[in-house]
Image: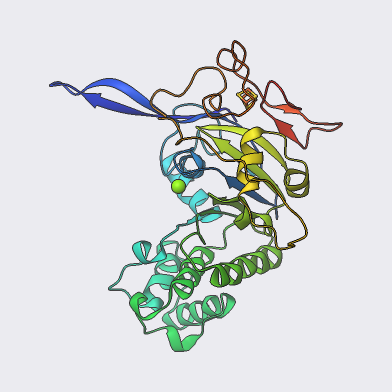
Length: 318
Ligand code: SF4
Ligand code: MG
């Protein structure tokens, strides 16, 4: 609720704070149990920072995070350790997040040890093998090291490690973005199976709308630290409202060659989050921006249609 994260920029001889990066600029949303919220936007729009703030891997500047009725924001160190079992994160590059000197058995087993989830070595081995089998690997892989695996298999190891503590929410931060398209589909299918099997919730971050389409129940589109549109996946893909969503969607290839969609080019790069544009952050790139309105007034999320499930932040839409 109202999540804000500013990173200070220091400068000068005395390291004064001279500016700040507005990484997350007032973001609110919820994710239900067993639900996947896809979060999409170009790099630098605050998706990962939002995910990390939820887990308090970084401390938000303002805002409130609540998990299953408990305040994450107000949690003590000890309470956070317990919450760390409920909430896990999987990263883009499993190779960077897996210790190259540790065997798969040690990598997956480590989480069990830290959280004292198994009592005996035998129990630990059984549970580790079970976790590997859950993600489509096997006992044969126990003694092997990360470099002996393909990218997709390494991501499976990362998922097994996250699952070791029986989490309820997993933030998947570009978890499939580095993989080939066919491998992406396999890992997404695995994540879906695991979600349905264990009732997991996902915050599924990607920079591209096509990646999240299949797995998401709802999708939030972020631009320069703000959610500009949030909707049930079906509504977002068939009836996008925000000009930024339209542009992102126009870049998604359509498998049916009979359907034509004009590509809406996005002009220039994302502006710097140090001095984001006034009013609507998107006005410098928006093809329909209205001078005197869009560059002055900040649009807030408002409902599209009858219920609140589809919301857009645009002066001219919704
Ligand atoms: Fe474009 Fe204005 Fe809507 Fe922003 S508020 S998306 S600039 S039309
Ligand atoms: Mg990121």
